[in-house]
Amino acid sequence: MNVIAARTDAVTAFLANAGWGAAERQPLPADASTRHYVRLHLGGRTAMLMDQPQGAEAPAAGPQATPEERRAQGYNALARLAGADCGRFVAAARYLRGRGLAAPDVYAADTAHGFLLLEDLGDDLYTDVLARGGDEQTLYETAIDALALLHAESAPVVLAADKPLFAYDQTAQLAEVDLLTEWFLPAALGRTADASEIDEHRALWREALTMQDGEAAVFVHRDYHAQNLLWREGQRGLARAGMIDFQDALAGSPAYDVVSLLEDARRDVPPELAIAMIRRYLERARINGAAADPDRFRASAALLAAQRNAKIIGIFARLAKRDNKPRYLAHLPRVWRYMEQDLQHPQLSPLKRWYDRTIPKDARDAPRFAGALS
Image (cartoon, rainbow, N blue to C red; front, top):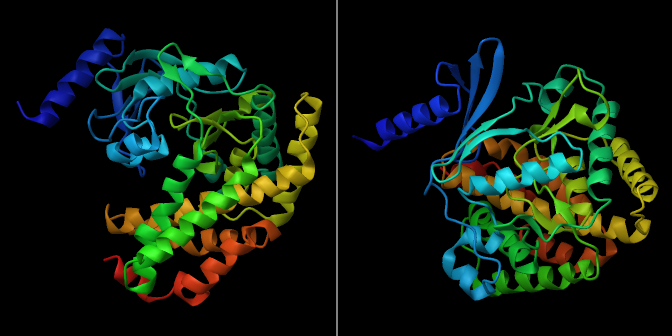
């Protein structure tokens, strides 16, 4: 029996055991990950099948692994990604639901084979609702209020008995920004980055990231944006903001998910809305008993937005070059605009000088860029 047939049989057995064997299956479009989703229809009910092929992604490192050991295990271990570990999705979903937030209920799980049967939160991604003229203010207020509630408690040490919530540490953050010099810079400049450029880039980021030292850690979704939020019109309050794609969650800065939402790589967020939402977040955090110093929060927001955007620039270049997904290149001009804005913060001026000197603005979206990735 070939691998595809064996996987199909395993799905059929999982659904039969869960009571959904007779369901009609409707595959959903694939995204940038190796996971696949199928909507199931059975007797007027719906559910979602998550199919995460085991071995398709390298596993995350253990909690005690040193940076050197993580480096030896590869990028997932360095960046503390969940890889193909469906158990981490289950644990994070249950934690979020326990906090009163709208993560999908897990109806059945076979984490050894990578199958989950999940509550169907609907089709109305924030991205689609906004494209249809949805109330942007209400959608973003709800998403921000959900974060403020989530951040009212410190990050848990563990999500489940066997699922520690790893720290979003400097090793992970540096591995992420290294993607820019590894994947974007060669395409933009037509040459690989030399060792001195890589070392200086990493050293500047290492210094900048010390700005986070001493911050209280919270649960960080890590990919909190309009493509991973579902608007649930029939619900009330925070239940209207359905959350997905949180399996890579870590313990980190409260600013991270806020800037992930407001500097969305896939859509333009009006600057005045972003300013209002940061103000709202700070006010809600104060009401929830987790007040933050506004100046320090905004400095962290600029730092982590720049770090996240550097990572995204590298990831989108990698998706185009390595994975033959050039559609992500269309978002690069927007991400660079965000990045350039973030680097205006005075504490990031050494990094700004490195980028201006090493990757001049005319190389960031030059016409030759797409051709260099083909």
